[in-house]
Image (tube, rainbow, N blue to C red; front, side, top):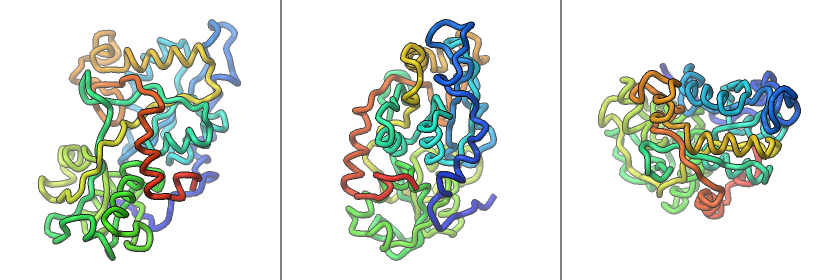
Length: 318
């Protein structure tokens, strides 16, 4: 399917929040007196798909079931429209738990210092959470580095995307290319959409995160091996975190943090009946082994890249 491309930033926050109007009750606003202190009647868990997906909720189903058992709460899943909506939803008390890109987490933390990261996903036990942004072109484009993006139509993902905009902007600046005036920017809306737009020729070049290019689109048959050429790789980016809203009860906050760090992995989930087997178990959209504990300091690298790019989106929502 040809991805729909947008030549402007993502829709404004008010429009984005429309998708979250049915978010339900927050952990603070609606305590259930029949449950012990620190529990909630409903927890709202929001995520933004990194690719065009109708099964995002299913990919978190085992983790959600585990969280419901650990907290005694109903966990309501929200497939959010974009990161700006999630940030505003947390600030408004409509979202309790959310997955973020590293950049959008830093934005959220800047808007509300009480938002706290508790875990990030990894592919295997013992790994450090992290990934890379790729600069990509069609294999026959003749472009060999980021300097060659100058004057071209370039696909980014979202103005609040870490690997789809922030790190690519820093890479372009270091290559002597202005990411705003030196290229014709297109916001594709998803990492898969960006990669597929490059493959189809709608963009001359673009950016997406590593596994979308290396495995995911190839496994689904949407890309052929070697159809795209990777001409740039970013430094390792801190892994995408799950974070809790500032108004979540402290006892409940600790319960959720412990659940992610200790139990939100394929080994535990399979052993405890949340999925049929470790091989069939999913722990989120990234389809890795599971989640490990993180803290805010892990995202200082993102803040440094903000300093390099001086991106307007580093200090304000779209």
